[in-house]
Image (cartoon, rainbow, N blue to C red; front, side):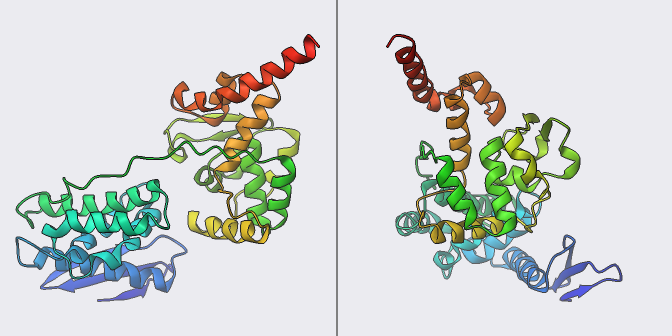
Length: 313
């Protein structure tokens, strides 16, 4: 077995190892490369099960995670996090997991943020947990892997002119995504999941299944947003497509320090400068707790100070 296309145009991938058959159907729009990669992931999973019990190779155990990733909310992103650490796993055994994780952390810190490293470490930990559940290892070797303390307090606020310059360097679909992010505070994944039927006369509905907090929220449509909503659905296959387009745009704009998520922070900044309260900002951005919104409290105080100075000058 290998990869093939059925009469309806869907791609399939399958493997047969030691009499065991595993078959998967890929999503509509999947490429031949996607099918080949899935075939390799399936073969890795089967091989991991057949390895000598006790101390299998980490690269083979990761095959279990690749199959598991298909059940997750963001399968392609999860697989990318796993593939990112593949070079460190080669030739290493399950019992080496803690040492390997420490090496991954040390090396990746030179180029990646703590949150990115933690996602890859989480993939490694889950693969080891799956191996333990299947009695492939005598203990859960991933239990001792420590995550890095997250650094989620980045606060970069862009001016309208900066956003305009950045957007002008984007291809058409990414330009629309940039303005939608600024004018709604929506996250990148939420924007990619938007569909025309989510757009009402005066509001946008961001459904629970598409949000980080798993809560539906309704965002008002301001006048400046309407032209960009015509681009919905944003024409990128996945999260990585928009990410790549944005990265190229920020280099072209000579703004390499900007992250897409900064547009969400900038939305909060604009709202507060316009007189919105922290509660209103929390509602629009869909924060799970008011603690998250408190990071913008200093902006609100600054705006209040300006108002007081105007009133009593």
